[in-house]
Length: 79
Image 1 (cartoon, helix red, strand yellow):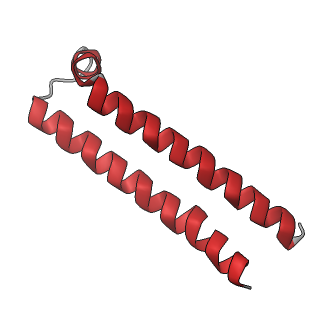
Image 2 (cartoon, one colour):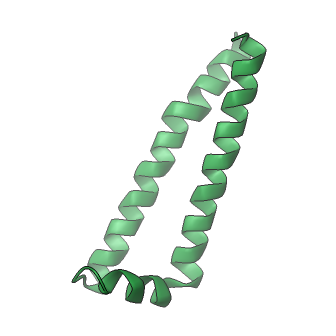
């Protein structure tokens, strides 16, 4: 692949991953009760544990986007 193609690939990966992150955050904030009821059908979770799991998941996903998409994008752009 040419650097230009890799740059475009990383741009699209970053955009798509941030869109997924924003949808997850939006559902978590605006449909919290529905999401909690859906998950407690399968797992016995307190609301505090549910919030902590999702908050941790969002944080890990965001760090993954930064480390695997955004940092290489910036590095290639600077080169």
